[in-house]
Length: 325
Image 1 (cartoon, rainbow, N blue to C red):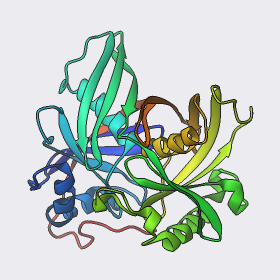
Image 2: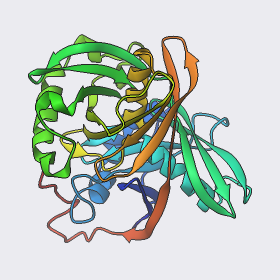
Image 3: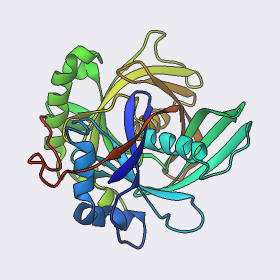
Image 4: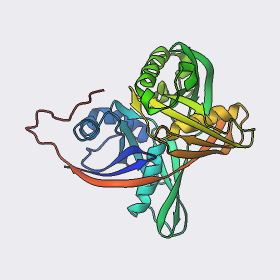
Protein backbone atom coordinates (compact mmCIF):
# COMPACT_ATOMS: atom_id res chain seq x y z
CA UNK A 1 0.00 0.00 0.00
CA UNK A 2 1.43 3.34 -1.11
CA UNK A 3 0.11 6.76 -0.13
CA UNK A 4 0.68 10.06 -1.92
CA UNK A 5 -0.27 13.72 -1.77
CA UNK A 6 -0.58 15.19 -5.25
CA UNK A 7 -0.06 18.77 -6.41
CA UNK A 8 0.20 20.64 -9.65
CA UNK A 9 2.47 23.60 -10.29
CA UNK A 10 1.45 25.61 -13.30
CA UNK A 11 -0.42 22.56 -14.60
CA UNK A 12 2.50 20.15 -14.22
CA UNK A 13 1.70 17.21 -11.90
CA UNK A 14 3.78 16.42 -8.84
CA UNK A 15 3.08 13.24 -6.84
CA UNK A 16 4.69 13.25 -3.39
CA UNK A 17 5.02 9.72 -1.98
CA UNK A 18 4.38 9.71 1.76
CA UNK A 19 4.39 5.95 2.50
CA UNK A 20 5.31 2.66 0.90
CA UNK A 21 8.83 3.30 -0.45
CA UNK A 22 11.60 0.91 0.68
CA UNK A 23 14.55 2.47 2.45
CA UNK A 24 16.93 3.98 -0.11
CA UNK A 25 20.56 3.81 1.04
CA UNK A 26 23.18 6.47 0.48
CA UNK A 27 25.42 8.94 2.28
CA UNK A 28 23.56 11.89 0.74
CA UNK A 29 20.65 12.63 -1.56
CA UNK A 30 22.81 12.47 -4.67
CA UNK A 31 23.97 8.97 -3.74
CA UNK A 32 20.40 7.93 -2.90
CA UNK A 33 19.36 8.92 -6.43
CA UNK A 34 21.79 6.36 -7.83
CA UNK A 35 20.61 3.68 -5.39
CA UNK A 36 16.91 4.40 -6.02
CA UNK A 37 17.12 2.96 -9.52
CA UNK A 38 17.82 -0.41 -7.92
CA UNK A 39 15.72 -0.52 -4.76
CA UNK A 40 12.72 1.71 -5.50
CA UNK A 41 12.26 1.66 -9.26
CA UNK A 42 9.24 -0.61 -9.02
CA UNK A 43 7.42 1.99 -6.92
CA UNK A 44 8.34 4.71 -9.42
CA UNK A 45 6.94 2.64 -12.28
CA UNK A 46 3.78 1.78 -10.35
CA UNK A 47 2.96 5.43 -9.63
CA UNK A 48 4.21 6.98 -12.84
CA UNK A 49 3.12 4.53 -15.52
CA UNK A 50 -0.41 3.77 -16.66
CA UNK A 51 -2.96 2.92 -15.35
CA UNK A 52 -2.07 4.93 -12.20
CA UNK A 53 -0.10 7.62 -14.02
CA UNK A 54 0.77 8.55 -17.59
CA UNK A 55 3.73 9.27 -19.85
CA UNK A 56 4.04 12.85 -18.57
CA UNK A 57 3.66 12.08 -14.86
CA UNK A 58 6.13 13.48 -12.35
CA UNK A 59 6.74 12.98 -8.64
CA UNK A 60 9.21 12.40 -5.83
CA UNK A 61 10.22 10.18 -2.97
CA UNK A 62 10.86 11.94 0.33
CA UNK A 63 14.21 10.98 1.87
CA UNK A 64 16.29 12.28 4.77
CA UNK A 65 18.25 15.49 4.08
CA UNK A 66 22.02 15.49 3.90
CA UNK A 67 22.31 17.15 7.32
CA UNK A 68 20.36 19.18 9.86
CA UNK A 69 20.62 22.31 7.70
CA UNK A 70 17.72 21.15 5.52
CA UNK A 71 14.16 20.17 6.38
CA UNK A 72 13.86 17.26 3.94
CA UNK A 73 15.38 15.54 0.95
CA UNK A 74 13.71 14.65 -2.33
CA UNK A 75 14.37 12.25 -5.19
CA UNK A 76 12.55 13.41 -8.32
CA UNK A 77 11.24 10.87 -10.83
CA UNK A 78 9.50 10.68 -14.20
CA UNK A 79 8.56 7.91 -16.64
CA UNK A 80 12.16 7.19 -17.62
CA UNK A 81 13.95 7.37 -14.28
CA UNK A 82 15.25 9.85 -11.71
CA UNK A 83 16.17 13.46 -12.46
CA UNK A 84 18.73 15.71 -10.76
CA UNK A 85 16.53 18.79 -10.25
CA UNK A 86 12.93 19.94 -10.41
CA UNK A 87 11.87 23.54 -9.88
CA UNK A 88 8.13 22.96 -10.16
CA UNK A 89 8.51 20.09 -7.71
CA UNK A 90 10.45 22.26 -5.27
CA UNK A 91 7.62 24.80 -5.37
CA UNK A 92 5.12 22.02 -4.66
CA UNK A 93 7.26 20.65 -1.83
CA UNK A 94 7.35 24.09 -0.20
CA UNK A 95 3.57 24.31 -0.25
CA UNK A 96 3.29 20.71 0.97
CA UNK A 97 5.67 21.23 3.89
CA UNK A 98 3.65 24.19 5.13
CA UNK A 99 0.25 22.62 4.44
CA UNK A 100 1.17 19.47 6.34
CA UNK A 101 2.84 21.32 9.24
CA UNK A 102 6.27 19.81 8.53
CA UNK A 103 7.68 23.33 8.68
CA UNK A 104 5.95 25.85 10.94
CA UNK A 105 4.79 29.00 9.17
CA UNK A 106 3.12 32.15 10.49
CA UNK A 107 -0.30 33.00 9.01
CA UNK A 108 1.27 36.05 7.38
CA UNK A 109 4.89 36.13 6.30
CA UNK A 110 7.61 34.22 4.47
CA UNK A 111 8.97 30.82 5.55
CA UNK A 112 11.98 29.08 4.05
CA UNK A 113 11.67 25.35 3.41
CA UNK A 114 15.17 24.01 2.76
CA UNK A 115 15.40 20.89 0.61
CA UNK A 116 18.32 18.70 -0.41
CA UNK A 117 18.00 17.40 -3.98
CA UNK A 118 20.51 15.51 -6.16
CA UNK A 119 21.89 18.74 -7.67
CA UNK A 120 22.41 20.40 -4.29
CA UNK A 121 20.55 22.39 -1.63
CA UNK A 122 17.60 24.51 -2.73
CA UNK A 123 15.02 26.61 -0.93
CA UNK A 124 11.28 26.96 -1.34
CA UNK A 125 10.43 30.41 0.05
CA UNK A 126 6.76 30.09 1.01
CA UNK A 127 4.68 33.28 1.25
CA UNK A 128 1.57 33.08 3.41
CA UNK A 129 -1.32 35.49 3.90
CA UNK A 130 -4.45 35.04 5.92
CA UNK A 131 -3.31 31.56 6.90
CA UNK A 132 -3.04 30.37 3.28
CA UNK A 133 -0.10 29.76 0.99
CA UNK A 134 -0.13 32.58 -1.58
CA UNK A 135 3.05 31.90 -3.52
CA UNK A 136 6.33 30.00 -3.46
CA UNK A 137 9.73 31.18 -4.69
CA UNK A 138 12.17 28.49 -5.78
CA UNK A 139 15.76 29.54 -4.96
CA UNK A 140 17.85 27.46 -7.33
CA UNK A 141 21.35 26.08 -7.20
CA UNK A 142 23.93 28.27 -9.01
CA UNK A 143 23.11 28.32 -12.72
CA UNK A 144 25.41 29.12 -15.61
CA UNK A 145 26.04 28.93 -19.35
CA UNK A 146 28.01 25.95 -20.65
CA UNK A 147 28.21 26.66 -24.40
CA UNK A 148 26.52 28.58 -27.20
CA UNK A 149 25.79 27.77 -30.80
CA UNK A 150 26.35 24.02 -30.55
CA UNK A 151 25.18 22.17 -33.70
CA UNK A 152 22.44 19.63 -33.00
CA UNK A 153 19.32 18.38 -34.73
CA UNK A 154 19.91 20.42 -37.86
CA UNK A 155 20.06 23.67 -35.91
CA UNK A 156 22.16 25.28 -33.17
CA UNK A 157 21.48 25.34 -29.44
CA UNK A 158 22.75 27.06 -26.33
CA UNK A 159 23.58 24.87 -23.35
CA UNK A 160 23.05 26.00 -19.77
CA UNK A 161 22.84 24.41 -16.34
CA UNK A 162 20.03 25.14 -13.87
CA UNK A 163 20.25 22.05 -11.67
CA UNK A 164 20.10 19.98 -14.85
CA UNK A 165 21.54 20.68 -18.30
CA UNK A 166 19.22 22.13 -20.94
CA UNK A 167 19.60 22.81 -24.64
CA UNK A 168 17.82 26.05 -25.52
CA UNK A 169 16.77 27.40 -28.92
CA UNK A 170 14.14 29.67 -30.46
CA UNK A 171 11.14 27.67 -31.62
CA UNK A 172 11.39 29.60 -34.89
CA UNK A 173 14.69 27.80 -35.54
CA UNK A 174 12.64 24.67 -36.28
CA UNK A 175 9.87 26.65 -37.99
CA UNK A 176 7.24 26.18 -35.28
CA UNK A 177 5.45 28.35 -32.69
CA UNK A 178 5.09 27.19 -29.08
CA UNK A 179 1.54 25.86 -29.36
CA UNK A 180 -0.06 22.59 -28.20
CA UNK A 181 -0.98 21.60 -31.75
CA UNK A 182 2.72 21.36 -32.61
CA UNK A 183 3.73 19.22 -29.62
CA UNK A 184 4.34 16.03 -31.60
CA UNK A 185 6.65 17.86 -33.99
CA UNK A 186 8.46 19.66 -31.17
CA UNK A 187 8.96 16.36 -29.33
CA UNK A 188 10.49 14.91 -32.49
CA UNK A 189 12.90 17.83 -32.81
CA UNK A 190 13.82 17.54 -29.12
CA UNK A 191 14.63 13.85 -29.46
CA UNK A 192 16.88 14.51 -32.46
CA UNK A 193 18.66 17.33 -30.64
CA UNK A 194 19.27 15.18 -27.56
CA UNK A 195 20.51 12.30 -29.69
CA UNK A 196 23.02 14.54 -31.46
CA UNK A 197 24.27 15.92 -28.14
CA UNK A 198 24.74 12.52 -26.47
CA UNK A 199 28.31 12.40 -25.18
CA UNK A 200 29.13 15.91 -26.42
CA UNK A 201 31.87 17.46 -24.25
CA UNK A 202 29.80 20.64 -23.76
CA UNK A 203 27.14 18.58 -21.96
CA UNK A 204 29.45 17.48 -19.17
CA UNK A 205 29.02 18.98 -15.73
CA UNK A 206 32.32 20.56 -14.67
CA UNK A 207 32.54 18.88 -11.25
CA UNK A 208 30.01 16.02 -10.93
CA UNK A 209 29.62 13.51 -13.74
CA UNK A 210 26.28 12.39 -12.27
CA UNK A 211 24.85 15.75 -13.41
CA UNK A 212 26.14 15.45 -16.99
CA UNK A 213 24.04 15.01 -20.10
CA UNK A 214 21.21 17.00 -21.64
CA UNK A 215 18.08 16.52 -19.57
CA UNK A 216 15.72 18.77 -21.52
CA UNK A 217 15.32 20.83 -24.68
CA UNK A 218 13.69 24.26 -24.32
CA UNK A 219 11.92 25.82 -27.30
CA UNK A 220 11.24 29.50 -26.57
CA UNK A 221 9.71 32.55 -28.21
CA UNK A 222 9.27 36.22 -27.31
CA UNK A 223 5.72 37.26 -26.46
CA UNK A 224 4.07 40.53 -27.63
CA UNK A 225 5.77 43.55 -26.14
CA UNK A 226 9.09 42.58 -27.62
CA UNK A 227 12.44 42.02 -25.95
CA UNK A 228 13.11 44.52 -23.15
CA UNK A 229 15.99 46.80 -22.47
CA UNK A 230 18.62 45.46 -20.10
CA UNK A 231 16.67 46.28 -16.95
CA UNK A 232 13.07 45.75 -18.02
CA UNK A 233 10.68 42.83 -18.13
CA UNK A 234 11.20 40.04 -20.64
CA UNK A 235 8.10 38.06 -21.58
CA UNK A 236 8.78 34.70 -23.15
CA UNK A 237 6.88 31.48 -23.73
CA UNK A 238 8.49 28.08 -23.80
CA UNK A 239 7.86 24.40 -23.89
CA UNK A 240 10.42 22.09 -22.32
CA UNK A 241 10.69 18.53 -23.59
CA UNK A 242 12.64 16.46 -21.07
CA UNK A 243 13.66 12.84 -20.50
CA UNK A 244 12.49 10.80 -23.51
CA UNK A 245 9.80 13.02 -25.04
CA UNK A 246 8.11 14.09 -21.80
CA UNK A 247 6.44 17.52 -21.97
CA UNK A 248 6.47 19.97 -19.06
CA UNK A 249 3.08 21.67 -18.73
CA UNK A 250 4.56 24.36 -16.47
CA UNK A 251 7.20 26.86 -17.61
CA UNK A 252 9.76 24.41 -16.10
CA UNK A 253 11.50 25.63 -12.94
CA UNK A 254 15.04 24.35 -13.50
CA UNK A 255 14.67 25.15 -17.21
CA UNK A 256 13.71 28.71 -16.30
CA UNK A 257 16.87 28.89 -14.17
CA UNK A 258 18.91 27.83 -17.22
CA UNK A 259 17.10 30.37 -19.44
CA UNK A 260 17.78 33.17 -16.94
CA UNK A 261 21.48 32.24 -16.88
CA UNK A 262 21.60 32.60 -20.68
CA UNK A 263 19.79 35.94 -20.59
CA UNK A 264 21.99 37.27 -17.80
CA UNK A 265 25.19 36.37 -19.63
CA UNK A 266 23.82 38.24 -22.67
CA UNK A 267 23.40 41.40 -20.56
CA UNK A 268 19.81 41.16 -19.33
CA UNK A 269 19.33 42.46 -15.78
CA UNK A 270 15.55 42.58 -15.47
CA UNK A 271 12.71 40.18 -14.65
CA UNK A 272 11.76 37.23 -16.83
CA UNK A 273 8.06 36.40 -17.01
CA UNK A 274 8.25 32.86 -18.37
CA UNK A 275 5.05 31.28 -19.64
CA UNK A 276 4.47 27.60 -20.31
CA UNK A 277 2.53 25.91 -23.06
CA UNK A 278 -0.74 25.80 -21.06
CA UNK A 279 -0.58 29.51 -20.19
CA UNK A 280 0.76 29.38 -16.62
CA UNK A 281 3.74 31.59 -15.78
CA UNK A 282 6.74 31.81 -13.48
CA UNK A 283 8.44 35.09 -12.59
CA UNK A 284 12.22 34.82 -12.46
CA UNK A 285 14.94 37.17 -11.35
CA UNK A 286 18.58 36.99 -10.31
CA UNK A 287 18.85 36.69 -6.55
CA UNK A 288 22.64 36.69 -6.47
CA UNK A 289 25.56 36.84 -8.87
CA UNK A 290 28.17 34.18 -8.12
CA UNK A 291 31.47 33.32 -9.82
CA UNK A 292 30.66 32.06 -13.28
CA UNK A 293 26.90 32.35 -12.95
CA UNK A 294 23.83 33.37 -10.99
CA UNK A 295 21.43 32.11 -8.33
CA UNK A 296 17.94 32.37 -9.86
CA UNK A 297 14.82 33.01 -7.81
CA UNK A 298 11.66 31.76 -9.53
CA UNK A 299 8.18 32.45 -8.20
CA UNK A 300 5.15 30.26 -8.87
CA UNK A 301 2.36 28.51 -7.03
CA UNK A 302 1.34 24.91 -6.36
CA UNK A 303 -2.12 23.58 -5.59
CA UNK A 304 -3.04 20.32 -3.91
CA UNK A 305 -5.12 18.06 -6.18
CA UNK A 306 -5.71 15.02 -4.01
CA UNK A 307 -4.62 12.35 -1.58
CA UNK A 308 -4.32 8.80 -2.81
CA UNK A 309 -3.85 5.24 -1.64
CA UNK A 310 -2.40 2.96 -4.33
CA UNK A 311 -1.95 -0.80 -4.28
CA UNK A 312 -0.78 -3.56 -6.55
CA UNK A 313 -2.83 -6.72 -6.78
CA UNK A 314 -0.28 -9.57 -6.97
CA UNK A 315 -2.48 -11.28 -9.57
CA UNK A 316 -2.70 -8.22 -11.83
CA UNK A 317 -1.10 -9.20 -15.18
CA UNK A 318 -0.37 -5.53 -15.96
CA UNK A 319 1.94 -5.40 -12.93
CA UNK A 320 3.60 -2.04 -12.37
CA UNK A 321 2.15 -0.66 -15.58
CA UNK A 322 3.11 0.59 -19.02
CA UNK A 323 3.47 3.72 -21.12
CA UNK A 324 2.26 4.15 -24.69
CA UNK A 325 4.78 6.88 -25.62
